[in-house]
Length: 634
Image: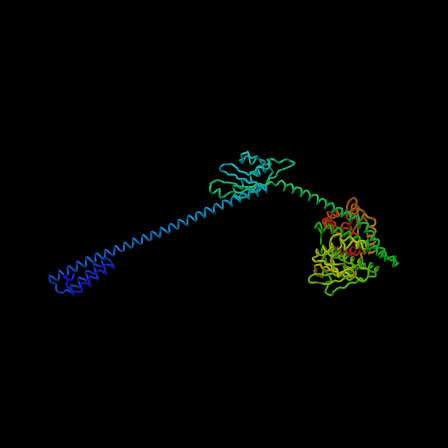
């Protein structure tokens, strides 16, 4: 361009600016740069606008325009090419990504298919195991669709209902397979389950039952809610179980339990009768022995000692009878505890008084040691405590040939503790557990030498536990003595003697019954003679009756302060006579006398209207104190 625009003119710089603007920013930027360059050239480069200079400006403008256009188009094409190249690369990337996603989905699909296949296999295995278990358990499966009305049932279910495989199972066939006495019940149960959407469970007999061999089936079912939502119909699924064996076992168990209850009742009746038959003569023996001991005509000390031995051994026999009865009651779970207020010290002294003749005969030192904090009275069962003491002190004296037997009473926490220590034959460590088994002793030689039933310790432990305590036995070895220790729950009280706390002292009580009119209804001549003599010596006025009829007749015509009523009398027994008296308005005290020691006999006496119940042989102190208390109240 030098020949045209001339040399030395900086138009080339303007042209370079146009080209750069077009290349960098596009055609419009190049045209704008061209306009600025022409303007700048007119102002600063070619101020003289001659014809030649105008021609030069024209050519410069044309060249700048062409350069701007060309460079702008080149830029745009470059951008488009770049975009096309970018789109191509993006498409390749997208294609690659898509291919990767497809491959991943194929892998996921393969994994899902594999997992589904494994799940199907596991489901098939589970179904197979379930079927095997169902067959092994003889569990039937059934279903009932309300839409089709067709029921499906497994082989086991058909066997339970007595249906063959070729029978099409419908609801009618299903109900016909149930015993006719129970069909309506089953219909009602299933109808209720369908209406209330609940599970039903019922045991019925199938129609295949016979009178000798009833076939029992347990049917249970439920609504399949998922099936109901999907198909728009109600479907019942259920199971069936053959429970014929279970029903038979229950019937046999009930029959065996009935037999056992009858046997237990027979045993109780036998024990009660034997208790009565033994207590009645023993009442006479012990009563006469006590009369002779108390009578002034028995001057000889030897004779008095012999009578004392008779009474001690008679008491021992009565305690054996009580032990047998109580052990039977413990086995039957029917032991009774009757708490009352009494003096524990006086009770122990009374028990020991019975054993002094034995201790003196064996030259043993029998002594009592009482701690200072032992309460004057407690609230517990005096007869049960006495029973334990009789057993343990009697054992200690029986197995001690020389030395001493020591009885201690002390408190331990909220319990009263009794300790009986002897210097007798002692026990080895392996012998002690055997002593707490019924009818067991340390070894066979013990029974041959000392005798005994082997019930005392067993019963004593039961009684101690029933009184809220425990019993233990310790020994340092054979020939080193033994120590029996037991506790009972202690509730101290200051309440004076009442009708239940009749065991209070060791000596004969000086009770004055002068002026007290007592009716004694007793069919046994010996029993009547003993009680009559006892009452007369206490100053009472006694009227005798031999049965309930005679007692009623005399009570209707005579003024009586208290009645001693034997329970078991011929003609009319004492309880029937008591009921009639109470119905007629008789308000005076009635004390039942009976050889029956069972707790239910005491309940019968109370229900009939008796104020107290004393068991034969009756201790004279207990009887006199009871009469004194009831007559002083009345």
